[in-house]
Length: 203
Picture 1 (tube, one colour):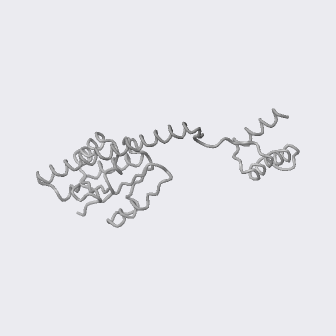
Picture 2 (cartoon, rainbow, N blue to C red; picture 1 turned 90 degrees about the vertical axis):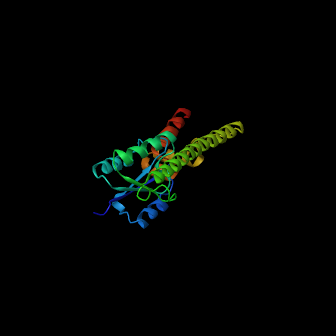
Picture 3 (cartoon, rainbow, N blue to C red; picture 1 turned 120 degrees about the vertical axis):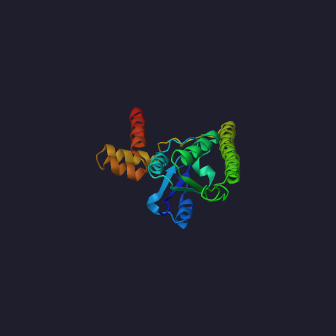
């Protein structure tokens, strides 16, 4: 009986592109409906698609899980090694890491092979966590520098412009709807009513 293949893809944010990983899965013969995608941090394994995939693997022993690289599985050293053990023992799944051929449990079943795979896994898991810590450190340093330079962080504050006042007056006179005013001033509903309240207080 042919081994069932499943793919797991992860990017850290909704803005990041997962197409490269998906293409790698398709090239390895994994049907699109068996590719599970999370757009979430790798700090832990509380991810909806991953947990669904894990339940499927548990119900379908001797399946193959394919991931692009170990940091796509996660970025927490202890969690990755623990999860790897659960997948290979409790779920009885094979795991193949595309960018690290030594991490392929379908190929290295003997004692030496298992020892090498475990060693590589330990090293890569540690590196993945260190990289995550470095990213967080760089972000914190960047925020500190920005604050020191007096830069405002986050979304820019909405301001009342002359254009907004003119469009707002049309709305107050009943010449146009609130929605039309929002479109004309390129403001969202919450921002529109917030600025409206400020104008009414001024008047």
